[in-house]
Each structure stands twice: as structure tokens, then as C-alpha cells.
Image (cartoon, rainbow, N blue to C red; front, top):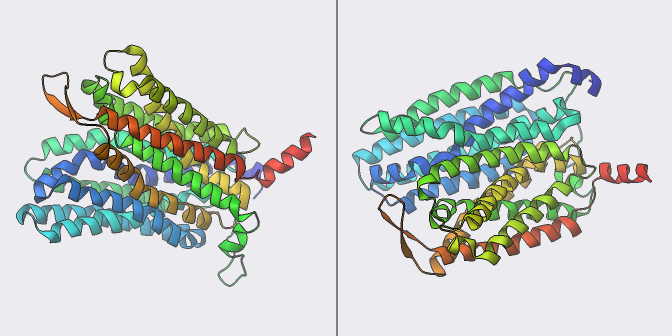
Length: 449
């Protein structure tokens, strides 16, 4: 089907690509709601919050690894992959509810904790990885002329899921009574199964597009990657990994940083606004990149903005001195919002950047392998920040604005910024020197001469 004909299929674009992508991504994106109920889970099953936190880390790790290993399944059959995603995500969520319930009846049982790791981490993680990948290529095929806008829309759904689902989850926890935390998982498992199954039924590639038959010779992933210098792909993988690591390092300390600058009473509102910037960055940066000759330019902009905002807070010692100082509060909030937007924008631009460099033939598989960066960043980003905060500075007590004293480590949070600043500089250098211009950008540059 020609691009012109597809562009006229407005209903097809939305019914067969955009809407199912949003149904899938708005469901699986709720994995980021973990912080809302993690303490309740820990209290209910009789373990520390630190022990239960590994469930979230495992979910992100297996998201990236399942995307890497199942990318070829997505490439061959999006209906099989989207069905796998639907079943695994719903079963994982229901299983999490079951093992929380078991833990409530058997306090401190390792069966409960390991069951949550397997359900929320491994089974849901497979659903996350396949669900994240399944609609992406389909969107780029339907929106051939605005690939960034299309993928940004879906990935924005992943980022916005937390803002949409958080108040619903909080209401469920408040109204379901004793054992509300496991009952909530049962309810949401049913709701998300319906949403994702509808998305699975609707998802369809444009008429006229056919993947090569299983018996047909197709270049391997490595052969496709070698059509460009291998340092090019290594640069893309590393700058994606660094952007996620830095984003997670700051976002994991976001609430405590907000409290340090005297905005404890507004922490919830600021968290919601940062989630909106995260989603907005996914849509805005990717749509903006559609107008650029070289999509790598958007990464250079993300890293430059992140470096500038981080450096300003470091130079002014904004986290330590921000309380009561309007200018410093603005600088710290700007840092939080810019990093959230760049974190989201980094995700949404990866598939389109890869397609510009390596074509559409194996994009799901290549995108899947690249998401392994997300898996490793999920294990290192939060832990990097936690290590720095635990080993630098000292804990002090401050008033949260309601007469309660809370423990914070302003110096530790400032030291996190030194680490992220250095990493952002490395990422910028990678984007400049390792990631070459795409064939599309090279052709445009020759045409303009």
C-alpha cells in the first residue's frame, strides 16, 4: 500500500494502530505505580520494603530481556505477541494478588515473597516486554510520514499510565478494607485483561504489508546491524542506557529532593506534574524529531538540556539551599521536569532512530535487543543513587510543613547530580562521535548541496 493511500486511511490508522497501542501501553505502563502500594505489600506480608522492592527491579529487568529475546516473535506475528502480552500481564497481576493474600495469612513466608517476584517480576515482565514492542512497528507502518508522532503517542500512553491509574489505585486501597491491596490486584487484573485483549483484537498491520515467510531467507539481526559501523549501534545502545540510568537515579530521589526544598506538602502534585512531563516528552520530542533531517539531533538536545539544568543546580547548590529561595526552587523543579521529559523522549525516539538507520525489515527484533539497555538500567539507576545517598553527606531532620520531622540527606542528593552530570556528558559525546548520520540524513544533506 502506498504512503498516500495509507495517509487517507485515517480511520484505519486510529482503529488498527493508535487505539490498540494506547490500550496496550496504558495497561502495562501501570508497572510504574509500584511505589503507591509497595509499602502496603511489605506490611501485609511481613517483609521489609527493601525486600519487596526487588519485584519492581525484576519487572523492569525482564521487560528489557523479554523484549530482547522475543523480538523475533513480535516481528513474525503481532497477534501472537500481543496475546502473550495480554495473558502474561493479567496472569502476573492476578498471581501477585494471590501471593500477597497468601503472605497475609502466613506472615514472613518466603513462598509469598518469591511468588511476588515471579508474578510481578518475571511473568508480568514478559507481558511488559512483548506488550511494549507489539504495537510499535505497526504504528510506524500506518504513520509512515509521522513515525515519531505515532510511536510517541503510544509510548506517551506508557508514561501517562501512572498519572491515570494512581488515583484509581489509591481509591481502591482506601475503600476495599482489610486485604485491600491483594483485592486491588484481582480487580485490576480483570480490567487490564479486557483492555489489552481489545487492543490485541484491534491491532493490525496495513493491508498490503506482508512479513517475509518463515522459509524465506532474511538477513540476520547481526547482518542488518553490520550494514552500518558497529560502533554506530553501540553508541545508540549506550546513550539509551545512560539516559535511562540518569533518569531513574534522579526520579528515584525526586520526592526526597522536593522535601529538601521545602515543598513536602506539594510532593504529590509535583510527582503528577513530573509524570505529565515524562509523557509529554515522549510525545513532544518524538513529534519534533519528525521535522529533523537527523533524528539523533533530538538526543543531542535532550543531553544538552539535561547537562545545563543539572549544572545549574550543582553550581547554586540548589537542593541544599533551596528551601525558602524562590529562584533555587524554580531551578530544582526545572531540573526534575527536564530530566523527566528527556527520560521519556529517549524512549519514544529509539524505534524511529533505529528504523532510520537499519530500515523496517527487522525493526521489532532490533528494537527488542536495544531494550536490553532498559533492563540493565533498571538494575543500576536506582541502586546508583541509593549507593551515593547512603555513602555521602549525612542525614538531617527537617519539618515537612505539617509539624512532622522527616529524615533527608541534601548533600547526598547533590552528589547524585555530579554522577548524572558526568554520565550525561558521556552520552552527549557518544551521540556526537559514535552515532553517525542515518542514510536518510546523509541523502538529505547531499540533496541540499
